[in-house]
Image (cartoon, rainbow, N blue to C red; front, side, top):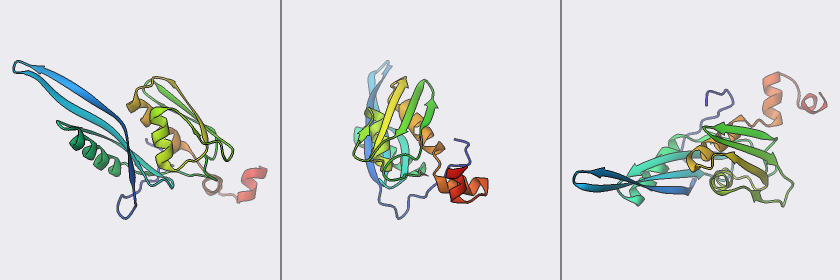
Length: 172
C-alpha cells in the first residue's frame, strides 16, 4: 500500500467494532501425532470511515481472534464516505482476488458477498454495489477490498491535490 492517499489512524480513543471474517483450523503432523492450531482473519472499524484488518494465529480459537483484533488495530486507515456510499467506481486487486466497488443510490444496501461485506459494513458504507472476481480466498478478498478503499478520493481531496477550487473539480 505505497500510496500517498493512505491516511493512517491511531487506535486510541476510537470506538472500534470487530467482525470475524473467517477461522481456519491448521493441522501439523509430527511424530507425536497431529497438532492443531487456528488462524483467524478479523476486520475492525468504527462504521464511520475507519477500517483495518488483521490476522491472528494461536492454539486456541479465542486467542487467535484476540490476536487478530490487536493486529487489525495496528493497520487502521481512513476512507472517504459520501452520503453513505463510496465516492466513485473503484477496482482493487490483491493476489488472485479482484474487487469492484460501485456507488449506489440511497436505500440500496450493501450488495456484496462474504468477506467484502464485513469490510464494507465495518467502514460504514450503507449503500454500495460490489463484485468479487477471481479468487474468493477471504484473506485476499479482504486485502483487495482494503486496497480499493485506500484508492478512493473525495472531491475535496482531489481539489486539494490539484490545487484548484471545488467547483472546478466538477465543472472541469
